[in-house]
Length: 596
Image 1 (cartoon, rainbow, N blue to C red):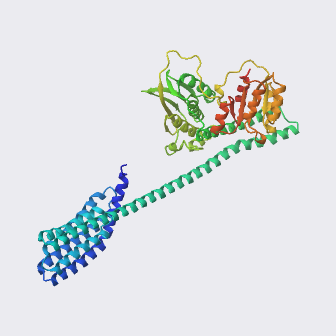
Image 2 (cartoon, rainbow, N blue to C red; image 1 turned 180 degrees about the horizontal axis):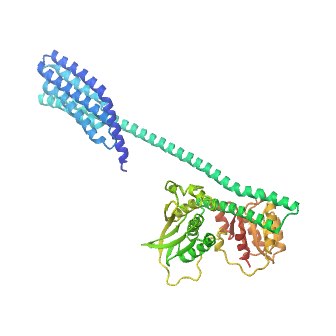
Image 3 (cartoon, rainbow, N blue to C red; image 1 turned 90 degrees about the vertical axis):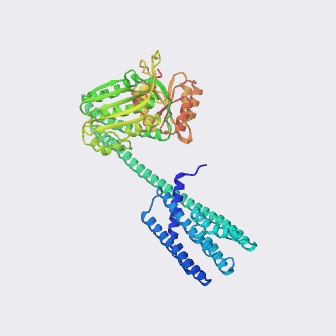
């Protein structure tokens, strides 16, 4: 396993820093020991000029090491600039070893045991003390120890005689032990430094995780506050319409025109609330990993034609020109996820454009296809462009014109996450007051020689995509079983189904559902079952009993507000259609009429 280069560089930086920090104490100790050594040498009648020259050399060396340490502190080199300084400190240590080792050349006197003992003791003592001052960096200690002791051992061997040879061998053994000990100390210091680095990294990681958690908590708080506000708006409107409608009914002042206006306004509020919940549901499914990608080769023409029909009405109401160019291209993608992306992009373009028009164009880019959505709308301020994929973010310009229908600030977040799910590149550019261009780049697919007559746009049975349901057949009254523990929902569903000309059967639990199914075994056309029922009864268990009682292919829809992947997988495994709360009447009607 190779060492981490960055860790090695940091380790060297700290080792050199410790060497520099030890220099003042090292110099003081060196000068004191050198002065004492010089005094002992003079007492043993060594030439004063040699002793003075040696002491002067040592003093100059100490001055040089002091300047080296000062320059290092002033330069305050970073991690990358440390290696040259390491070499300088090693060179200074080696020079110090040479000066101390010169004692063996100038003052080695085999015939004067006291003088020889002074030299031996001083050299071995300074080598031992160097373990403390040079211990942080082993190359510095080795550079000092070799020239310090080897000259003395060599003089002992050259002088001959058993006592001196023995002394030379002992000095070499002492050198070996000192270097091994210095290496162990350097290793211990290096391990301590690595542990410190790991602790610092761990602290940084903990702090970063804490900051991310706090940021996520702040984002969650802001998200919930924004969602709460946008949900309260339509509820507030409905809360005003209901008592007004009751008062009008009590006073017999309910005219057809007034009733139509109130109903339309209430429906508008409900549509807004349903759209917000649908967007939140989309985000929840993306966050939970409940959206599975089923990539396939698909033509763009049917998808773009369907989406252009969705935005045609708002474009026509504003007098906008809508142009769509599919260029006959095919892509490899998930039809449902791609539809979500383009639906949001085209919907935003229509919402925030008041004059001019929209252009949706597919352009070949090598082995990719880029689908671009152009508009001549209000544009995005440069300082807000990077934030448009945040949940509930709406630019200042989007709120400046009261004529515009406001969105919820969730569309681009859904687009961004869906693009990441597909592995598609998403980019945009915009000019304030001039318009915007959003583009998603996908892998290009080769069209088959013969295109199929019908192109499906989804692979899952999910009633959240009404455009994917079968077209209605000729009107016929159907018998529909509704299973829900909530009495208000049963009542509302009964009114709705009767208004469409169908026959509702209402059940609050499994026992009632099975009883009604058995008594209408030959006439039951479909069933709507809530996923969570009273007494921990499961809607899937009810569905299984209904099919066992009536027929195995009885059309069933499971209605739930649960968006977890496990629930969605269980519903798919049961062969049922999933419907998410709040139900859109058009989605419900398409499911029911599809059973004719």
